[in-house]
Length: 317
Image (tube, rainbow, N blue to C red; front, side, top):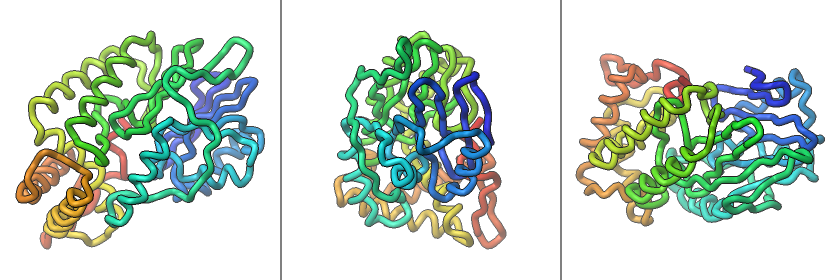
């Protein structure tokens, strides 16, 4: 689907992908590239929107999850002069992803791409003589998260740092309490900006910015008080994708699978949820109960799980 945010800003959304933003200024900017599974639809939207990959000057990466960078390599092949802009924590995060990939079913990896522009907090990218995009490091969802601030239009391109009313999954490649603290600090920094509209990685633009901050802040306080809530929130998107990718899986299969996989992650020094391994089956049962309550999943009489809505529906409100 293609929408216009303004005369020179286009947003495209697809089922498996992040939102893709195209900024048509003196410099042509693309923010994220979506998932490789949606490539044909994305290229069709590019053609319909008059977007020429070969004319893009900068590709800004909000973070290295595959639904955001799944087409970076393809676009680089078709425009080797395009600058791919990433966080100074990008390689650190990708190294964890690659090591973590041995644990099948948790994350997937995009085709490798070469980055040539590493930015730090506060760096600016000039897009006209008077307009620039400021890079703001916003770890929490991932260690390499960047939000991009366009001050002349008071727009924040937040990646997966901010959703509408939903706290994102936290970085599982480090201590979960640390990731929660980093996300809280990222929110505090972003709240100081005079944001007119948030352009998230998934879902519609957020115009009720103040109300959204209030809701997210309240949820973060609850998470800080209840580790179980943090863990449940973190598992939901992973379980959702697992059910989507494994047709016929049963409720018990899910509980057993993630109990084993997260034990492997703990052995690697990842996913420190500050809970004993013995607690995971109980926690996973709570996750599935919450997904049932949110009407995300239904079960056949034999326990086979089915998603009620498309993947990522709950963060696209």
